[in-house]
Image (cartoon, rainbow, N blue to C red; front, side):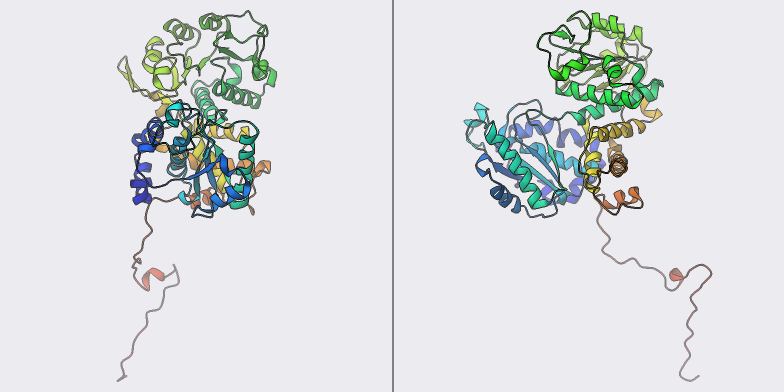
Length: 487
């Protein structure tokens, strides 16, 4: 593997060609790699901790086998919900490996600080259980108290081995925290504010889909609206949720707790078009995986209500998006502010080229992770992700807007991550969550000094003229005059 043979050159190429290589290093190619992980011949990457190692001492012993002692970032998965592919068990190790590669390439985190971990508690995937090349435990997935104990012991062992400042990111568990995706979605909405001049607190939004992704975005939208001056109740009133059963209203039976603040005192309906006509929202945010849910009639209705309708088709992969970029631009006569969860090709409409933006959480997590690692942040709160969203939106240029982008160019993510890390550090010190003391006098200079460099240090001494180059202005070095023996 190229990464094993020359790590610095690997990251140099990845940094310089991130737009072309990001889909290979991470989604969607990483999903295919995970599905076939047992057939890939490669050097070991990461650590495996099984349910049979369920004690602090055993887990600590396994962690001690890792050659690096100064570990500051751990990405861990149990392989139960790998991307949209389901339970891949031990084959899911590709996710922590790929995620940490992006920490290095896009965030500038030192590669020796990173550790991928897989918790092997079995798998419910029958194909893998009968696969002779499967590398994990051949048993059904463990749940309940025994599983919870493994998680607790893992945390305690990590703290014992690497210290309490180590950052642990859970990835692709069954119930994942959706705030990184939420942050990049809100960043797109903030970019819309920057373009139209209308703050989020003045608009209404309809969410199609009410799962973890939608709820994460909705909660962060509420936080932003509150920051803009609304009360929580006023912010909840501006967000409308729809799921497979239609609009979430107060009349619905067995309403889930997380949906209750958003429930509306309106008649129940399953028609998105009807809700759009009734609510007159600024934007539609799709996380439903219902292909074609944003129909031509609905999108044209949005265009009749708004000068620049906001259409976010965030469902992955592309074949599950609520509408395509081409449809959104065509049905709104090119007026739409569009973002998607998966990349779409450029769209040509009325002689103009549009380059639709992708709401990739790679804009968010490398910078947040870098800031958390460098400043030893004890707790990453929701406000941290909101700050990251503002940084992303602030870095969208007029040139980006002219091309239809709501996010900065992918090639600028590394510099964007530095700015996010600086903002995270300032926020952490302000809130008392940073434990790096004394506080650096110049936070930006400190962050840039810690960034992983993909260039080789100079090993040949630099030549210079002496004494000319040693002279200070106004204080010339006197030239020595050698007298001959005869004199």
